[in-house]
Length: 232
Image (tube, rainbow, N blue to C red; front, top):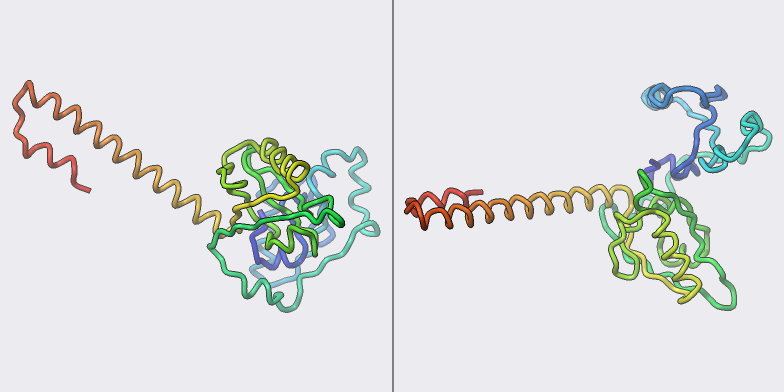
């Protein structure tokens, strides 16, 4: 996960980047926990961290893995000394509606690259092409797509969501995306989970009351006893 508005994002890292080397040391066969420790150690000591990465699908489809560690073939990115103004001014924890419209004379693409969510559910925007229709609409790297044209697709399969985006591009030449940066998405998930839990609790309480009320007709239970089920 590359957090929105983070130094890693400003430095060019994307979601689904596969780490090949850390400060020149090959880590392709190193366990994820150790990689995390190496990065955290460098961060805590405020040292520079140089990562050699490639996109996950490229790594999986490359037979000769050693070629990927050739630094002469790598494009170099560096975290800026000061964060860009659009990062500083960006409002976190706010879901956004972005409408992308193709220019029939100039554009054949929305200008986004996507990556599947965990377990193939949901879809992230990992890269927005500068000056593309998507960029002009306000989309940003690491945005999570929550709705497409008003339809909630957050828990749909990643490939299904991709097909909907492709269909909208080909048929309509436009699409409305409701998206969240990584911070806003966490808040969104927490709130929907809380609402679902509360709704489920209320339903169970109501069901228990209905059952108790039905029983009381036969057993002549004290009516005050039912009120205990409405304490929250």
